Length: 228
Image (tube, rainbow, N blue to C red):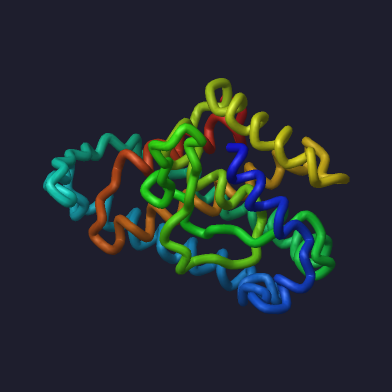
C-alpha cells in the first residue's frame, strides 16, 4: 500500500505528466463517459442472456503456466440486479466527476491501470523492494481505480477487512497529497468498484470464466456501495 501511494503521489495533479499521457477518451466529454457506461451495460446484458440460457459453464478449470485452477460458477441470479443498479449510480455520480475532477486536473494521477497481484513483484532483499510490471494500461485516472482492481477484485472485497489496507494507503498518500478528503477517497473507491464489476463481465464474455473475481466484485459492491 505504501508503494502504491508513492506511485500515485509522484504524479498527483501533475500537469506535465498529464500532457504527455493525454486524457483518456472516456473522460474527454460527458457524452464519451455516458457512451462508455452504455457499453458496459451492453456487455452485461449479453452476459446475462448467456447466463440465463445456460451458456455459461458451471465450472472452469485448467492450468496457467503449470499452476492448476478451478473456478465454480455460483452466481446468485438475484444479485445480477446489482449491475444495473451500478449502471444507474454511475450515470449520476461518475459523470459529475468529469468536469469537477478530470477537466480541472484535481484529485487524479497516473495509474497503473491493471494493478492485479500478478503485476506486483517483491524482491527477496532486505529492503523488500516492490516493483510493478505490465505497464501497457498506464493512463490518467482516479487513484482508486488501481485500488479497486488490486483490493476489491483480488485481495479483500469485504469492507471490514479491506479498510485497514485502504487506510494504510490513504495515510501514506496524505503524507504528500493535501486536500483529498477521506470522504472523497471513499466515494471514488465506490465508483471504481462499480466500474470494475464490469471488467469481470468482459472477461466472461471473452470466455475467461474467472467466477471468483466476479464473486469478489459483487461482494465489494454489497459491502461498500450497498452497506450490507
